[in-house]
Length: 502
Image 1: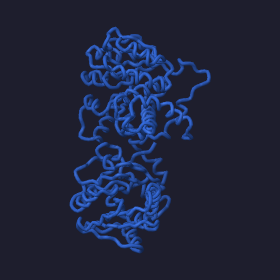
Image 2: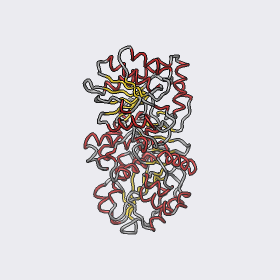
Image 3: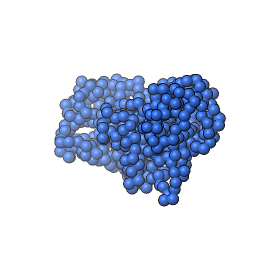
Image 4: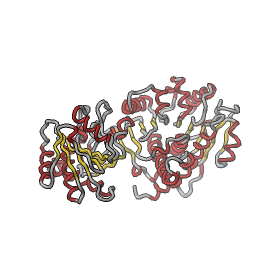
């Protein structure tokens, strides 16, 4: 897992590296710039004309070094220095003088003096050291860049964006691609601020590993390589009862597809035995479409009104397509007070809890809640921005001793120990009906197999997104459906087992 550090921590990491490698700060700047250029050239076709915008700080120093290296690699580069009336930082000044040995710099005192006539704009104005919104000349320059039709690539961070908080009051570079140093910044992973980052890549600039080992963090980026493949080992002499007993409670009139998606996902994710409790209206469709599942029928025809004999199951997944009948709300209360093992709670189950907040206090510890933002708002109230929402998720997970999966572009998994894990897999094609139902089945299967709730949520979200990425490669984003994730799950699990991650 990658620790997501604050701007202050990253600065300390730089200083620690300079002292303990040891390496001079200007040589560290050179190393970072070389890493940037290597990735840039590997992903750039032909010999594009490049405009670089440098500021007076160390991010500007990176920009001058990048400009020099690109020229040395045969590219035509126009370099702009924005004159804010400030002295250049020491390393920026050194890098600036090195660049002057091979080319000239356009000094920009007013926005109309900015020269932008290339195919690509590289933004090296502020980086992660910014502590106030971009106004005045900086605002005008950023506006010109955003109006340009050229592709924009940010060095470390888009200028105007803060590293570890959401403040969108000033003008911000709208980058197509951000090449950041060593590790992503928190703002990359928040919806409101992540918009400005575009696609992002982190390049290793050789910061000292010893610092990261000792530095604490509450935020982490969970990657495919963090999945322990031994979680999916099966003993030669195992039988189906050894691989977990799952109960999925789902479906109502017109929403039986959600029950099917969750149930099949649980089986595809290794559940040994699966029972689906559904209203009578879903009996024929479920038995026909998923013969591997056992079916428990509710007394009611159109909705779920009662659940019996839950003690025989290792986990209960509840919510997909469940509907909002008041009698179904009573089922939740009954389940929460009679089942003392983890539940996976999604969709309409969350919406029913939102109507009776007292139910929150009855949920068994270690259960997993999987709201999207709308469901979260109904449960816990609206927030001003994504970062505030994440902080609230963290507090609730600790207070209630629950695992909360806040679904989104970088799905957040908040654990009872106060950690926040951002997911690194998935794509926008998954923003379609039913994908969350698949996730409910995946996580339920993992918990049933004896994997703790926090790990089940982290790994489940990662596998879910990975299946989405596999499906995207097959059908594209526009045509992607939740059933495509079911088809892609086997390949995702094969990838885990075939990898050399562990």
